[in-house]
Amino acid sequence: MTTIAWIGLGNMGSHMSSHLAAAGHSVIGFDINPAAMETARSRGVKTASSVSEAVSEAEVVFTMLPKGTHVRSVVEEVWEAANPGTLIIDSSTIDQATSIELHRESSQRGFQFVDAPVSGGVSGAENATLAIMTGGAEEAVEAAEPYLQPLSSRLFRAGGPGMGLAAKIANNMMLMISMMASAEGSQLADSLGLDPQVFWDIVSASSGNSWSHQTWYPVPGIVDSAAANRNFEPGFTALLALKDVSLAVEAGKAKNLNLPAANLASKQLKELVDSGLAEKDCTLIAKFVNPDGSLKGWTE
Image (tube, rainbow, N blue to C red; front, side, top):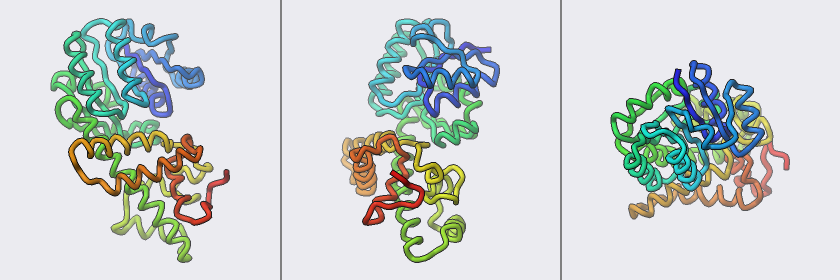
């Protein structure tokens, strides 16, 4: 049994930490949201009153946080409160530059650091079927894998420091672009009079198929995991989706790349966020297809 600290017990972290507890580890979590702490306790995770308390005796520390600034702040607390040699695994989706800095500084301070972002959404976290892509020194990645396996159906070694994030940023850019295709295709099919179930079945067997089509289809009553079935309460919020695609846009600018589809996805998600719908599901962008903003499954 390993003592594991888990910082960030949101929709993803609460499920992921519970799988480690179910695997027999002693998991101590912390989140600034008391409700998230209560949910974690109901799933078998002990909780602490602070980051420092959570990590003080931990052999492994996971972070699952919204932004690079949050990860940086927490890791600085880990450096102060945890024992040297502690393995830090960051499963957040943040900018690659911040992650590379944390790799370097952690090594200088005697800590191991791995970037291990995940793909598969809340359903993947709940069902322990996440795809996880790791970046870091080989010995650190090898040390992390036994703790990632209970969370995942597939582990990928992407390369050195920051390479897990490079893979995640590019992947999520593709996801947001394919989400737009699903949004527009579903509404066009409906306007042309196609039965939504028949159209979904056709696309599932045809060239328009995608993970977004299979998992997030923005029409109620077709895909159980779709937010359209619950008035677009989030599986993945518009705000987080905007953050992820913005990371890709900024990475593309830094490399002097032209990413027009990613820029369009960013524009639509920003419109959703700016209209006060930041905490709704990102698939609500489908409402922009119809001139009056109406969408089946959506009630303001």
